[in-house]
Image 1 (cartoon, one colour):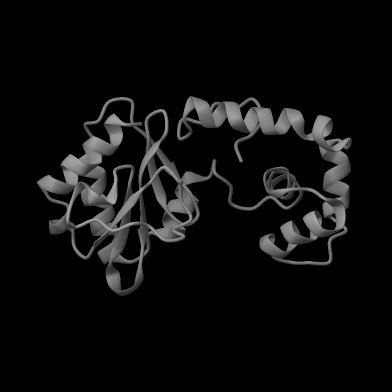
Image 2: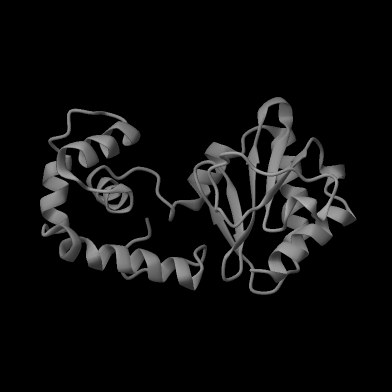
Length: 194
């Protein structure tokens, strides 16, 4: 999560407002300060982020968003602000990097573009996320778009992709050459709706 008071240029204004609201509502919603929750989290016997989050929910009633915030403070690791580390960890395969570079070139001229890096994907937003790209097996990538799957015969509906629910379609890309004029148009259409 972004640091308090820091304006992260890889987050939309809406995302920055959300994270600030999440930070400021923790004590009001739970009756405990962030320091109290950090102390509780440090007693957790679990070792992975997922199991720690489940432990906070099961044992203390702390839900997903507040739990994630507490864990990011109690056990700092690579967070949303460490874009370079997140990107390097995700995009290691040269075939994946070539496709990412082609998609980045396709969105580069879109006004008000915000690029966000997550652990599992790279996202592009204006006011809302309109596209995301993640590596897949065999050197391919999966591009999520904020257009309906019927916008192109190349698109299919997403299934548990882990990115924004606004992305209503996906496209598997096997090479940078597949990031063609049609994909650029689909990206623009996604951007226009964001």
